[in-house]
Image (tube, rainbow, N blue to C red; front, top):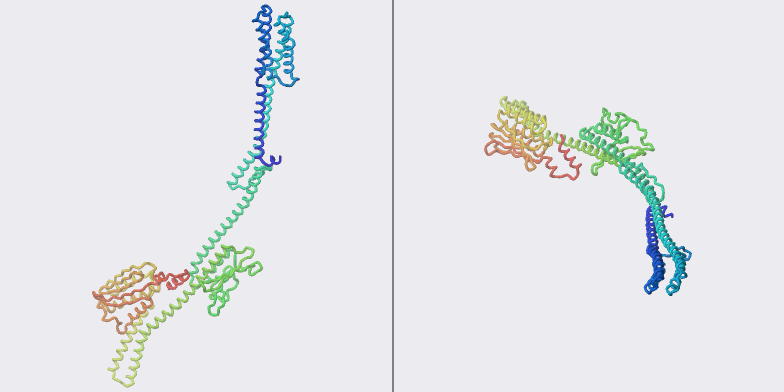
Length: 635
């Protein structure tokens, strides 16, 4: 019973078994009743034939009485035997119930007794020749016929009762089957169809991401258990979906914040890498924006002093005072919008210390304060690591630029000193010796004619020194007023074409941004010096300047159709070729001066630009490559 209450499948199985059992019982009972009714019609016919046989015996006896011959006598005997056989025939006796108190059994015994005790003795006596009492015989026959009619009636009633019993049984089993089917349908409707419909609704609502619907099925069968399980699953799914939506919302906010932070870092990188030496003015706005966005701060930047190995505070956001080692008191980057932080180094504040380093070189530290309650997420830590790397790159490049500027300044001063020593200093020394010679001649009162030669040499030396001074001033004052080497060379060739009153052709085929500004200055100086020599000494009618890039090398060729050179050495008291060779050596190239086969002079410069050398070297780290490119692209 508990199994039927707990299991819908068990109830349906039991209902099907009940219906099947009732159908089998109905079939079996029907077969039994039908089997019991078998022979009823034959018994009725047989009983009816007894009645006919009785009338035949009466007629045969009357005929035998009128004609006592053998043939009527044999007919009476035959009819009597026939009646006895039919009375005892299985068709009749098989349809009569065996119980002695049954009406059919009593009526059969009554008929059999009348035949054996009354009618059969009279027939036998008539056959033996005794006088037949016709009135008594007719009375007996009439009583027997009445008894036979009663037997036939009872047989008919017995058959009809069996048919009625079969009908009642069929109706009973049909009613029981209908009751069972009704119970099954009710159970299926309330315990199968309705729960399935609720489960389908739950599944449809879950498919539309509505996890609030519940089946709330009662009972202990399978569908009720399944419904409660689905309700629990829907509740858990609702909780999980809400948590996922919350996590997605948080991730979306983190991504948006990370995107804004990356945009701040990107915008700040332009200021960092283009702000010169003013690290405070370029980095402080970016740090304040990151503080506001990431809800952190204050941020302090300290740099290592390579001399005494100590950390020097350089920048502190939201600071009420300047850093101790502030280099520019006209800068207010640290003091803009000061906001005293109440959480500074408090019990609810933690500090994140990030190294500001490039490779193995530690440049300084970045100290970031944040609330312990909020903490720092992984994305925030990655952004802060990117910030420290960006600051390290900017500081490293700034130092390298400062070092390179110092080296360039010392190199330029060395060049100026060397050129002054090789040109103007020697001329002045020569003039000093001539002045001393003139003073001795005046002290010895040498004739003025002899002193005039010294004065002529002094005049010539002064003119030469003045000319060399003008050349040096022109060299030192040269600058690129137009962007790009091609425009500067075009301006130079037009200038010298106007000065020489002859055409100066320019053939320029160089990829853009190949040369750094330092290389462009040196190339332009060499071209100008070569054109100046052509103007002064070549007596040329045509001059050509060719600049090409091939095989990772830059080739600069200045040609003319002038008188050429007697030798490759510099003319007396002229140091132009020496200066050009020095510049070629600075570029890491080679300068050749030779005469053309068709006449004139050819000045050939060939060197590998800094960019091509960087490509050939293939730096292993991006920081080294960036530092090398910055070193080459100094101004």
